[in-house]
Length: 553
Image (tube, rainbow, N blue to C red; front, side):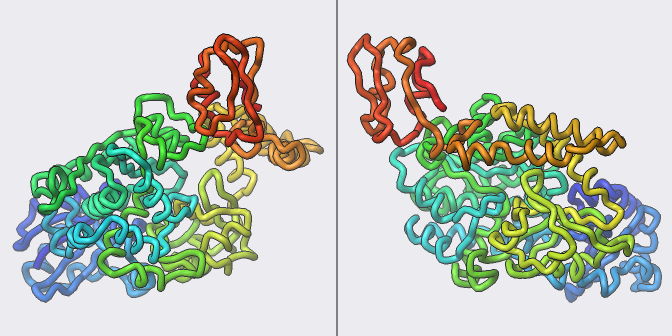
């Protein structure tokens, strides 16, 4: 027999480390090891016992006082000693009703041992990829239909191909592990539970785009994830999987971890790059996109943890196998962190095309309090609430978008009739007001004013006209986009116009020399002019002007 104790952050917080120490202090005649999070967070601490035939007995909600009973079962076969701890058939369905690809090893293998990963076929996909051309690897990802799992759902192959085709020998592959949505913990669980899977997916991606440098940007609030990732990188380096001439090929790649300070805005890829470079996390104007000018202005590709966690499986099983799951526009599986007023909270991975009802009621067990389901909040602060009458909405990018919410990175906060929707809105507005980077006026000031109104309303001081004013604050920027054809924040490139203030222009020619399309004319020491018909609105002139002569409006 062998004992495996779940030691993800959720398990440790529930007392799993105390259980492990208690088991070490009693006479247990078998190996004791650890694993990560199986996803059944509501049942932690979890202790899995495997007999000599590898048959599993799962014990849940274990405490240190159960150590002797577990010892009696392991040593003497006395199952009655642990009968009350054995997981129920109903709770077991939490896992059996899922389809796990990104989470396939989570809660099963030891995340601190590379041999546990290689025993499952780990790094075979990397070997297979290195026997192909980078273009062939990208084509498999294209066939799979894998979209970025960070929220935008942008085709992964397209981003890889763009970085591949960008000129330059120095390129970077970056993993966005800055998981900032309230209630979301999918990426943390993958890194804590299966770090080598992330490394393998990143190495395949680095080979595909031609990058010799891989970077993981992970928030500092994830100390266990960082610890296990560092350990995995060290093990992979010692095994020759990271470094020079990997598996005897011409491909070389090193790894670096950057612990971010936990700014929500750094989940946006260009703000993340700014932070990586040591600057304040502020979004850059696009274009140029990171594939052309990213980290240190070199071609870069950024995907999140879950995206990379699918890559090795796709290479091993083929793009068609992944594409066979899901819907026409949303392929494969998606991981959700299901929290809130649901009976079975934790990590759920299901094929796209399942419904919200499937996740919340069939897998999640319905409402914890047995009060009526009211709504589910999806997409984090940028998302929205889907009401009860839309519970049968299909889970894919298009269908969720039609409800007014978004897929997001995978947070799913379930609410029952006891949840105040105004209070929920206030919670997320409080979050966004505090986390605003301050670059855009409407975000910096508007969210604060809206929060103040909601605080008044929840304090009983609401007044007539508040709802209309909230709507005005919410939609004023949209009105500017639609009617005035202007972006007040200056972020939407299609709505920006660049001009040169003749009074400030010194005629240094720097803007003209940096314009990629020759849209700027003028002579030395005389004011220059931008031809708006030729201008592609890349913003290069704006960024290089040293006299604030280029105006963006």
